[in-house]
Length: 511
Image (cartoon, rainbow, N blue to C red):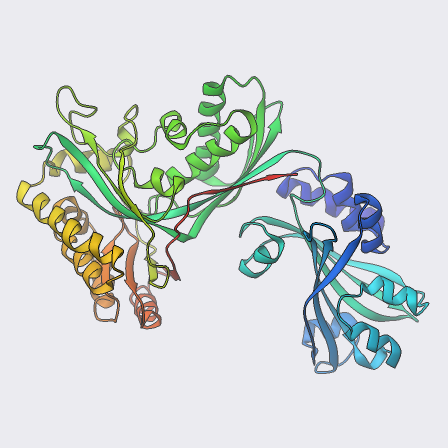
C-alpha cells in the first residue's frame, strides 16, 4: 500500500470515527518499529506482555498472507505493549510466523515470552521492510475490551502488515489500539446499560400515589456514547437514535448555558421501543457525557433536563446504580405531581420517582432476552391512549401485585431464592397494566411466552410494552435460548443470554 493510499484510507477512517491525531496517523502508517516509536513519543519504557503463544496450523487467510501452505505450522502470538511504570496496555498485537522460515536461534528468542519482535530482529541483525496491507476501524469485543481496559463496542484503530525479509513474508501482524488513545483531546465515553421493566405497580391511584415500578438492569445490550468539546454541535450516528442524541444535546447545552458545542459519536446502541429502555439510556448517556465535559450534575438533575423518569423511575435508577430496583411512584391527585395516568414520554416536568429498594441481583442467575422482529412496542400517542383507556386498573389487582412483590419477589432476591422470585414474576403477568400489555401483543409473543414456560426457566415475563420477552433461570437456559430461537424462526428475531448488572452507567475520560 503506497503512502498516497494510506493517506486516503486515513481520511476514510476520519469520516467514520472523527479526526485522528497526528500520533494516531503515525502509528497506523509507520513502516518502523512501533515499540521504539511509542518509547520516543511517550518518553517511557515500553514492555511486552504475552497473553498467549502457541504453535498451530495456518488457516487459509494466514497461509495466503504469508505465502505458505494451509496447515503449515506457525507461531501464533498475542501480546500487549504496555507502559512500563503504570502497566497500562497501549496496544494489542497478534502475530503469525511460519516456523519453516526461522533460524533456530531466532525461533528460540521468538518463543521466549515478552520480547518485542522488533528487538528480536535487531538482535539477529535481520534487514527487513514492513508492508502495510490494511487499516480499518473495528469494535472492541468482550475479550479485547477487558485487556485494554475499555468498554465493549468502543472503536478500535487497527492495521495489518507483514515483515518482509529476503523477498518472503517472515511475520504477519495485526496491531490494534483504542481510538481514545494517543490523542491530547479531552474525551468522555459513557456506557449505559439496558433495563428490563417488569411492571408498573399502582395504576389505580386511590392511595394518593400512582405509578411505582419494578425492574432490573442488565449487562447487554448497552449504549456507548463519546463526546468531546467543539465550537458547534455535531452528531455522528445513524437513524432515530442519532436524532435523539442531537435533541438531548441541544437541551443540555442550553440548560448549562454552554456557548460552544460538542462533537458526539454514538458508537453503539440498540433498537428503540422494544421494551429495554434505549430512549432513556441514550438521553441520559448523552447528557452525562456533556456534563462531564462542561459542568457535573447529579443523575436526577440530568433526568429533569432530559425529561426522563416521569412515570417509571427504573431507567433512571438503572443508569445511576444498576441492580434490582423498586421505585415509589408519584403523588397523585389535584395537588400531586400527576393528576392523570400518563407514560413517561408524556410526563415532562415530573421528577423521577424515589427509589425505595435497590438490591444486587444474583449474578449467577442467567437472563434470556428474546426480541421478535415484529411491530415495535407502544410509544407516542398510542401509548398515551392505552393509559387513558385502561387506567385506573382494579384496586384488587394492585393489591395482589403489591403482595406478590413484597412477600415473594423481594424476599426471593434477598435470600437468592429463584423459585420464590420466579413465582412472583409469573403471577404479576396477569395483574394490573401488565395484563393489559400482554393482551395487546401479537400472537407470536403469546407463542414465545408459552414456549419459554415449557423450559427450565423459573419465570417468563414481558418487558414494558414489549415485544421483548425475558426469562430467568440458573440452569437449562441453553434450552430456553433454543426454544426462543425456534419460536422466532420465521421473524428472524434476536435472542441472547446475559446477566444482571449491579452497577450503573460507567464513565471514562481520556486522556
